[in-house]
Image (tube, rainbow, N blue to C red):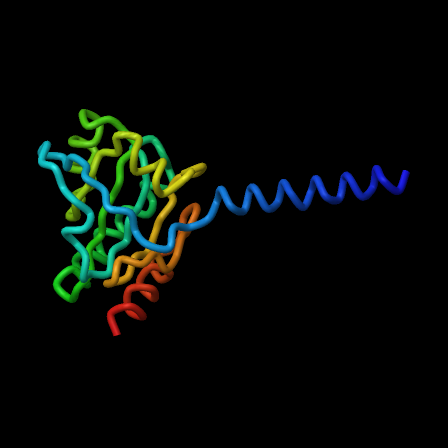
Length: 160
């Protein structure tokens, strides 16, 4: 009986450790080389030296759609101050072009080929958003919708 309890407890601790290791946020932002909506290849490292918000989203995701106007506003307000917003779309290129136009997206949107979600993931839920500092370090990870004020506070803190 006592062995069974100890075995169960160890199993739970081991499972928690494994899940925690799988869900960790990368310490350094991985470079990505993905196509933008015009078909051009874009390297994430081209934005090194700026504060970056990297948002994994899809056209069919309601909370993702709710965040986009916030990101558009943040890009307008802080884009010339050392910040850039980058969307990583999990949707097809053909769906994204009209979606971006309809929403008035004013920041780069890159199409994930499966690599980005694997390197930054596992991405289990969207939106999943990473805040990256000027030194290419991942400083925050948010899963799910966040109001504009959360991201704005992060941007302001890192641009000091």
